[in-house]
Length: 151
Image (cartoon, rainbow, N blue to C red; front, side, top):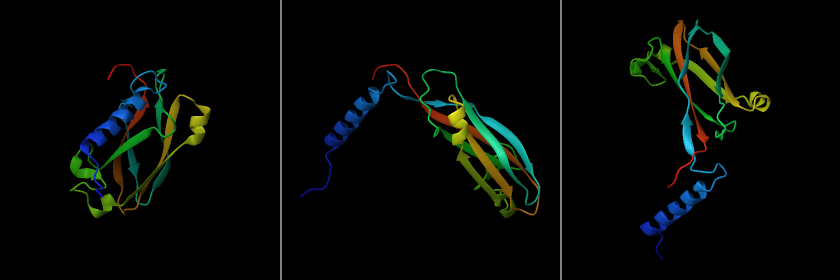
């Protein structure tokens, strides 16, 4: 008995999924929305921690289909802004001290409940190095939005 799937079956399956997506209540084809890039300079002394960074996505469009799990993407450059060699955590020029950053984030469900047209994450950063560092912090959001159009 063969366990392989014929190519035609895969394309039929993909086509059926596409038809289901096209029938979403948004009235059209779903699209990925993308926010602009937000950023900040965060200066941390040795062993200093900051846990009060809030990154917010707000919208006015009626076709945004965002839930609290709109997805933020982060980029952090250490001591050299926009230089890929200093992009945390794996930039090729980062010293072990520059790599020694703790970074955590979580979705702020309470903020979402009280503000229906925005999603917010809370960010915590801690410099575990013996030297002070400048962290160039950037965030961009992606989210689902309804759209119109044909296949």
